[in-house]
Length: 458
Image 1 (cartoon, rainbow, N blue to C red):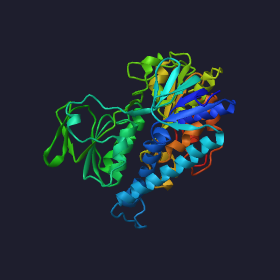
Image 2: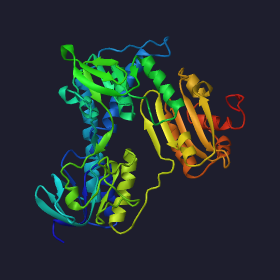
Image 3: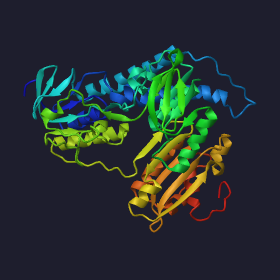
Image 4: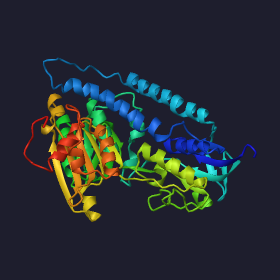
């Protein structure tokens, strides 16, 4: 086998691509990864790692200013933005070396740098050099989606990518988009001292009780909410940006950040030449085993329109490589968790009440407020709710949804409960450590037995 012929060639080096490479090597196969940009994909370079690092930093300032223990004085000085961005980049660089370059070397697969393009259904060119493989995996991820908004391209807008490269803080910012990226970005910049206006429905896909908590928190933070559609953008006076809404209202800010979702990153890949179909939104069409319309090409991660979480990308990457190498594998999405890293966090696993009803369940739901969670009271932060969605007949847990400080830490247990068919009685009768937020699961399960408050330890 010559140096340009492989068992598997993977396009990309994000979570899906790395997982595919590791899977192929575990099967003793010869695999090559191809990357035209920095190693690590969206999560490492422009997504979860930098955003959560900056959110953690902004949270420090916010806690100093919104201190629930005034007898312990705290202060918040001026933010050193260049130093903050420099530390963020140091984190990215260190993780790129430890979790990508070193991992690739340890597993024994090379990474070739260059632009990849399929020239036919069986051949890939990397910078015009042919590379052939028995099978391929496309794992090129997604990029910010820009809406068809009149006037948008006449102003200097930001995306989540470019916003996290700013070297100074604007006085004000308009954020378009109420999904998880827009929510995190809006609160990130607000907590760093920027006056933020958010346009779009807050958390449109989560439970209404949960969204209401974050809506109230944003208003307390001073974030202005316009929960409607943006219809046009124009330049304002003094280099400001004006955003007009469907109801005729106008928001203005020094900067505009567009966070209206993400689209498949397939530009220049030659999918038509490869016989790989995409859907109406541009995502690569795959079957339950990650196979595309070309039987020798598989795809994984965000480029397929799968839920855009790094752990989903990794799991689909393993499945794609397995399928490409002759072992068809499907991903089990039961109890899939998700977290929005706002303050308080939004977190969920499994079905919403509406989705459960659509699937034919007779639902029985309970909502526990943070005022009944001892940990929240000790923290002097009684904001939030936890909602359990169950099947009224089987009493099995179908979904867990929360807006709480540390809500994400509850979701592993929630995922176990859903995946393994646990009932509310299983949860109510299971030990829960006192004065942890995880105790909220047991307390919420207890509401199915009685709506009368119990003692904190009963």
